[in-house]
Length: 119
Ligand code: HEC
Image (cartoon, rainbow, N blue to C red; front, side, top):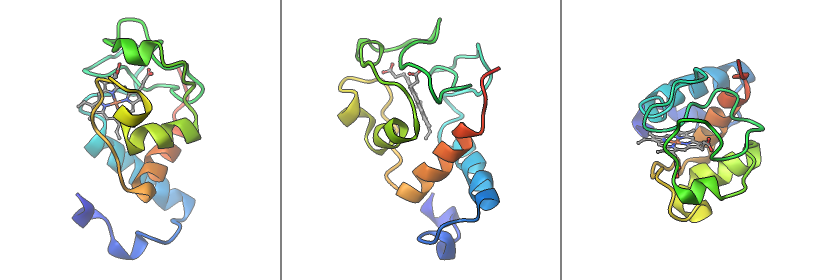
C-alpha cells in the first residue's frame, strides 16, 4: 500500500485539496469494504455518514461489539486518530481490527471524513 503513495509527499504537509483527494482514495482502499458513507447502509461495519460528532456504537442496525457500545467515545479528529492508530488499544475487544499506522494517511482519511456531512 505504501508504494502507492508519492514518496515526496509523505512527510510534507499536503495542500488541502490534494489531501482531500488522497483521503478519498485511502478511504476507498482501506475502509469502504466495511464502511459506507450513506446513512442507513451498514456493511460489516456501521455507516460513517456524519461520523464526526457522533457517539460511538450508536447506529441502529449495526453489529457492534459490547466494547464499542459502552465505550462512551465521541468521534472527533482526535479520538478517530487514536482509534485508527490501534483500534484494539483504544476500545479493548472491538470487532474492528484494521489499523492505519501511518499518521499522514490517518490525517488524510480523517480530513476526508470531516468533509462528509450527515444526511
Ligand atoms: C474489515 C472491516 C473493516 C474495515 C476495513 C474498517 N472497519 Fe471500521 N469498523 C468495522 C467494524 C466491524 C466496526 C464495529 C466495531 C465494534 O463494534 O467493535 C467498525 C467501527 C468503526 C468506527 C466506529 C463507528 C461507530 O459508529 O461508533 C469507526 C469510526 C470506524 N470503524 C472507522 C473506520 C475507518 C476510518 C476505516 C478505514 C481506515 C475502517 N473503519 C476500516 C470494520 C471495519
